[in-house]
Length: 235
Image (cartoon, rainbow, N blue to C red; front, side, top):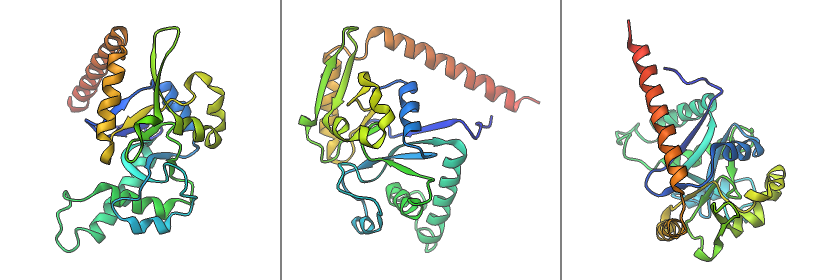
């Protein structure tokens, strides 16, 4: 079944990503960034350092360059982006016989960003309010907090310092201030990622109740997906 073009799609890497917030907070922060597609960002411009010269914005913030491990956007806009990236790969990568499946996806999303950074079709989460990458980020950046409801949350001084100047309306949400929605152990951040994940687990996160709710919602989603597929192939 086709996905409606105005739905939101969230892409994340697999084993080195931890989701820390619910969909409502993620959508609120996505809307605050005022772009139809928002990418995570990181401290370094990789794999092509020279592309940093084409970035028009101030690159002195902690997260200044495209990280392709997490992004969110409207279905139609994401499809438009992927179509253009595919054409770019066809012209500049596979033209001379290179394998289209052996490439660095971040290179091609970087190229897409620098082409469209001024037209409003894409933005970077330069403050980590949605996607907090961990490459070159010290462990001392983070702290944990357990509220009166015994819910454990992870807070980052980078988000606390920078996020709410970028997305001011999110700053009115004091309970979420300083809390990223997702952490990604990219690059040399995998060790920190594992440390933070184990620390959160030791503090009782996630709770048994939230796991049961998540399992039930996953089962319902899978059942709905199976039903939609069966309807789509039925004569």
